[in-house]
Length: 463
Image 1 (cartoon, rainbow, N blue to C red):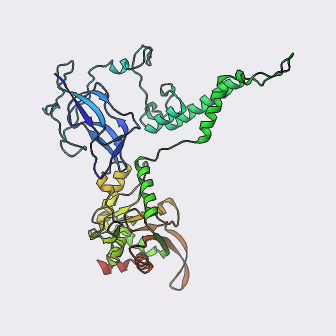
Image 2: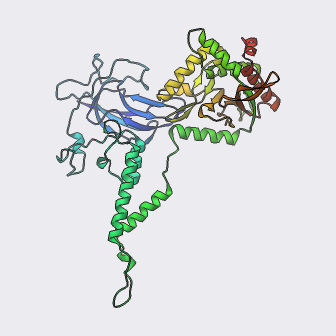
Image 3: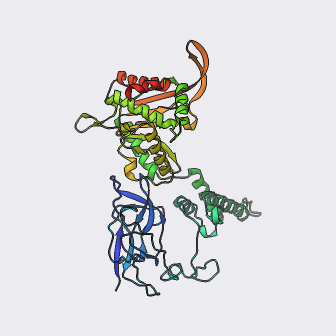
């Protein structure tokens, strides 16, 4: 006899209290094995595949794609012990009994056996859930309708526009419906409504006998529909502040509210730094990135000015100077700006920093960073020069005390050894929490960084 088990959204760690359903990996009627990923969710930190601790038949799912669920809310229910028509139980291929939960929260924390292929128990279930008379692509009543949509944003946009995704032809890979398809369908629908309105509601003409105009109450409903659609269009698209962007908005707003920050900047001649990097990479072995060299300069500067590797405990009214440097660096991804953290950056050389930063950047762009890899930073390096801009005033990554911003390195006229020359110049911006230090300390830090950029040999004193 089957026992129905409820699987709730687990605690994903790092104080996260909610997650957004991005994509369901199973459907009602599928047979799942222990630790098989069943849903992909997005937290404020990362994209996570959530495995189910039970093996059995999925009997219900909770939350549409795009829905935010709190930790502890039901995700799905599984009938444990139910058998499929072929006589096989829901046990995993390695012999584990599906009635035993694994207790795992995230993929990779326990069993590494490959997930079993999904087996349909009742092929007609999805079709039976449709309204009476609904027809699938083949025209058979009750047949399931397949809609090629994976983006919650596309689904939400279609709902807001009042569009049926089943009537939209996708232009993405393998017929995938993308945002442009929905917007084009919405424009076509508005044009059709406007054309219908122009034919259905001609301009009122005076009555031949009484001289009265056509009453306003006789206006076609299509006119009101077109006007309402026009008002919705005028309001613009509303994008919820949640996920990565919502977390960033909250942190930046808190930084502005709580931290009395100040910014100083300086131009530096980076010609010798570029030459040093070329020489390092010409010697063979792992390549050293420019960002890794700047990170190494930052760790040396923080060793010289430890006041800036700190945080402020507002409740205790204390400045907490931290023993090690966990260096965050800004990385742009399709999901928005994230800040991966290099642990114990002060104990790594330029090559080790380069390898670790490359790994974290790749994981960030793939949406595979764990919450632990996105938290706990003590200082942040922001290379906005990759966007082709010279300068900026960085906002401190709360609860840190400082951030170094690096602009683009561009050839500019520069006085070098008493003569005008074309050199590669970079602007360095440094924002700091004025509670942890005064301008002299911040200026000393920035000047040391600039000296290392202009004369990399200065770093030899700290090696």
